[in-house]
Amino acid sequence: FAKNMGLYGERAGAYSVITASKEEADRVTSQIKILIRALYSNPPVNGARLAAEILNDQELRAIWLKDVKTMADRIINIRAQLKGNLVKLGSSRSWDHITNQIGMFCYSGMTAENVERLSKEFSIYLTKDGRISMAGVTSKNVDYLAHAMHEVTK
Image 1 (cartoon, rainbow, N blue to C red):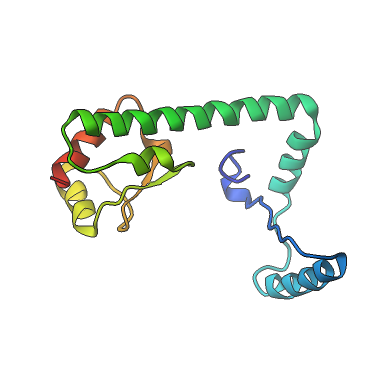
Image 2: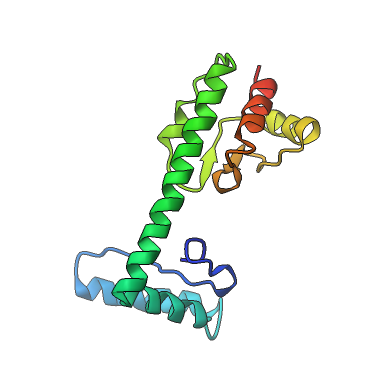
């Protein structure tokens, strides 16, 4: 929830484990509590309270779900634009993975050398493994990103 509810500093979230029985769930829960106790004494509650308020109110939940869908659709669309632009530029690579993946991040398949060139030559910054934050790609910069990716992967 930290990202899609704007609760970055609140560390709201969930950890889910599927078990075969209630007894096993109790044992797993007991072990998780032991492990996390060393990480924090009192977890933050503000984010959890805000998330609970949104999720437990039908009207707020509907608004939030609509917002999440809008964001997801924008990222899906921008992925398609990025891939389409790379194809239009004549890239000999397959960029299907850009549209086959889902979520806010895209593993581009670019090498550390490609990433370094993006940084030095185009002022585009990715993680060394080529991961792109698709949330930061917009209709205003997708053409530039595609051009840069094409240039460094020729």
